[in-house]
Amino acid sequence: MAIMELQVSFICLVNATSGTTDSNTAGNFGLSTRPTPINQDVSLHQASMPSCSQDFPQIFNPQLESVSITPRTTMLRLSSSNSTNVNSTFGATNLTGIFLPPHINSSSNNVTSTPILPDPFSTLLEESMLDEISLLDLAMEEGFSQAQASQLEDELDSDSGLSLDSSHSPASPSSSETSCSSAASSSSTSATFSEEGAVGYSTDSEVATVETEEGAVGGYQPGYSKLCRMSYQDPSQFHSLPQLDSISHNHTYNLPLSSAFSEHPELPLSSGKKTVRDKQNSKLQPPQDLLDKHSSRDERRARAMKIPFSNEKIINLPVEEFNELLAKHHLSEAQLALIRDIRRRGKNKMAAQNCRKRKLDTIINLEQGVQDLRRDKARLLKEKMEFIRSIRQMKQKMQSLYQEVFTQLRDEEGRPYPPSEYSLQYSADGSVLIMPRGLTTAEQNRKPEKKQKDKKK
DNA sequence: TTGAATTGTCATTCC
DNA sequence: CTGGAATGACAATTC
Image 1 (cartoon, helix red, strand yellow):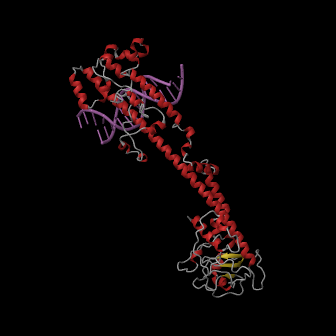
Image 2 (spheres, rainbow, N blue to C red):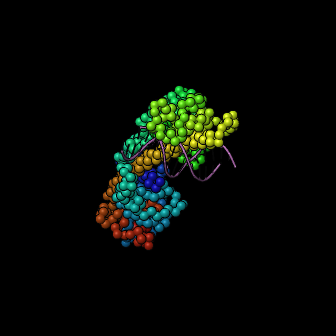
């Protein structure tokens, strides 16, 4: 804010002085040239500036009260003749360090006290300081060089920011595509075996339909981008993740239908007579036990216990229907216990899948947030560099203006002031004085009368 | 065969 | 109190 204010002010100053200087100065800064009201009665025409008294009307603020002048001092006051309301409590400032008047547009009416701004140019805009800041910030950019910043800015403009860090991001599209394809294949395989895996992932038996749905096949599969395509139905499940509030979640996660449990209880029951212990050795199963080979443990358990209905029903039926189903059959305590375990495990399995998907979604969104912030950071860094560049140009321009003004000043005898002995000083009220070098601001403040006495007419 | 990734299960908490 | 969702931790399985 301060820098921009300075810039605008200085642009106004340059505009006002463009008559004898570079007429396109303002344009050089690449900034807004919105004119700022400047008191046009400011001039140096009363100073000994034979050839340029009309050329720098706005650089040097008028309104300085020309009161007593001490003849002994050689300070020259460059002010307008109609200055009236400003006392001499300005802090003289060497113009070599002045960048711009602190209140260039307040010269016509100094109702508000003008704060002393000693040497704002040298203190705020010292080029070396700016460079140091710039380098420091760049060093703190965690590898964000200026070139990188520009590059990032380009990426921002081309809305391709997702490429950031994509090389090491697990959310690469390739991985997601691989996941989806494998998921589809596994799903079809599951459908072949009626009780294959994914118990109770869906009550929908339309396997073919589901397999065509994006990200819906095979239940949870690794791959971040696939997760992004998932639709959730229950956004309320993400209370604890405020950063995800803007994301629509389908809490059901399009559970896989690979099981496609058509109810054929007689099929598994007729084929599987293995005990729970036997199924633990399924790797050694003979070919006739393909069903077991492709069955989940609970399915094998169910077959072993001769559960007369599918695991899919056990898991996915509503409580009422589930209880009715149990009531319809005469089941032993062991069977009932197994059925309840199957239901609990099946539901928990789906819950675990959903939980993992949510977790990955959270990671994805956080990574996206990081990328967004990085782009913002790069953009701001680029803007900063542009501002620094503009300030540097302004300083150079100001220095040239200083030289031009100083070299045209003449004393009472028409002689130029030696730069080694005099310098232009800038006061807080906007006036400009030519003062002998070595006279400090403190001295001026202690002896304000001298400055006024030395005002150059 | 090994290790990483994935999936299933258990325990627990919470609603 | 029950059912079930959520989730960390660990085991089993797959790749």
